[in-house]
Image 1 (cartoon, rainbow, N blue to C red):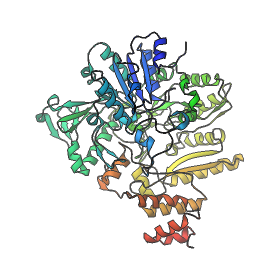
Image 2 (cartoon, rainbow, N blue to C red):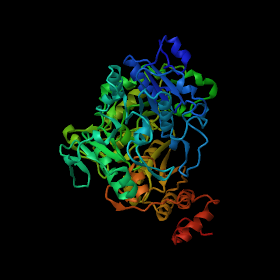
Image 3 (spheres, rainbow, N blue to C red):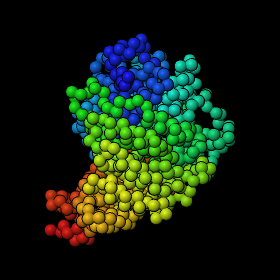
Length: 611
C-alpha cells in the first residue's frame, strides 16, 4: 500500500511501531520525491527494512516538543538543514533577510533557524546525549573542514568542531547511510562507523598517526609515508595566514577530484577533523534503484491547507536523469557534493518514471525538464577508466576538453525523442543549463543543440556565459565569451530557418573575484551591442567550499597562488551590479557617477548615457 514516511506520532502508531529505528530531522518540509534528500535517505533505509520517521522543520523556539515526539530512535538521528545551506536560504548576496522560503508550504520564511544543522544537532544532543547524531546534506557537507563564512565574514572551524555531532556524512549518501545503519544495528557503536568511506569525524590527538611517520610533500602538505593521508594546515594556522587557507583548498579540491584520494586531516586545537575518501560513483544499477523506490512524489498531505511548496511546484513535472558534473566552475558546489564523475540512470528507469508521471491525474502533458546538474552530461564518462582513476583535473572540459572524454550527444538526443513520443506527453522542455562548451562537430553537440532549439524550447532558452571579460571568465573557469557569441549565431540561424521567434537569454554574475568596474562596463557595452536588456543576473554570493569563495576570502587564486582583485565593499558591489541596468533611465545617473569616479568616462559615450 503506497504511503508517506511518518511525520506525526499518530502515523507511527497506525503503523504499529513501538519505537522508530531512525529519525531524520530536516529544515525542509517533507516532500516524498527523489529530488529531496530526506525522502531519498528515508526511502533507502525503509527499503532495507528500517523503521524511519521524519521531523520536518521542527520548532526550535518553544519547549522542543517536535524533537521529542518520537522519543529516542533505536539507532540514530540523521540531521540536515535541507536542500540548501540555511544561510543561503535566508540571506541575499547583500546579506539582507529573504522574505520567502521555497522549501516551506506557502513559500513562508521563518520555519528554520540560521545554521539549522548546528541548531538541530545541539538540541538533539541536549535531549538525547547517548543517541548518535549524524549530520549530512549540503550545509554539513560543504562545512566539513575549516571554511570561510560570508555571513559572519570570518573563517569558521569545521562544523564538527562547532557541534556535538558524532559523525558527518558528506556528498550523496545512500550507500554510506545504509552501512552506518547496519553497523549500529549489529551493536558495533559509532566508533566502528569511522572506518567507513565518505564520512568525517572528530578525533583526539592520541588517536592519529605519529608525527614521525610524516614527510612534507612538494606543495607543502604533510603526507604519510604510505600516501594514505594528508594533514592540512591547522585551523589555527589558517586563522593567521590566508595563504595557508588557500593552500589547503588547493589540496582539498585536488583530492576530491580524484577517483582514489587520500584521507584528509586538519587539526583544530587539541582535536583533529578526519575526512575519509568518498565512495566510488554510483553504478547505473544503484542510481536506478534509488530513483525506483516507492516515492509518493508529492508533499505530505499535512501541508494541503498551508499552500503549495514552491520548490516542489518547480520540479514536480521534471525528471532528473543523472548526478554529478565535470564542468568544474569556480563558484559551484555540485562537483564537491555530487562528485565530478557522472552517475547516469538507465533509459529504462527514466522512461519508467515518465510513464508513472503521465498516469498521474494532475499531469498536464508538459515535461518541464529532462536533465540534471547540467542538461547534457548524461552517459558521458572517460573512455579509458584507468586514466580517469589517476586524473586530478578539476574539469573534463576546462581549460580544454579532455581527449579521454566520451561526449557523444546522440544517446541524449535519442532519449529526448523517445520521451516525446510516449503516450500522454505533449511537450518535453529542457530546463537544466546546457553546457555549450561541450559541443564539437565530432560529438554531435551542435546537432543536439539544433534538436533542443527546434523541439525542446518553450520560447526562451537560458544559457550561462556568466561574464564577457576573458580575465573574469578565467577566474570562473568558464570558456571565453566568444563561445556565447557563436552559440547565439547558431541559435539565431536555427530560428530564422525554422521561422521561430525564440529568445536566447544569457545569465551573468557581477562582483566575482577578478571582476572590476571596468569589466562590468565592458559587459554593458557588449549587451548594448547585442541588443540585450538583462533579466537573468546575480551578485556573487560566497558559499562554503568553492574556489570562488576561497578567492573572495583570501584574495589568492589557490590554483596559481597569485593575487586576485576582489570587490568586497557593499558600495563597490552595488556599482558593479547596477551596470547590468545601463538601459534604465533611473539608474543611469548613478552609473554616470560611478564611471566618472573610476576615471572610466570613455564608457559614457559607448553606453550613450552622457547626458
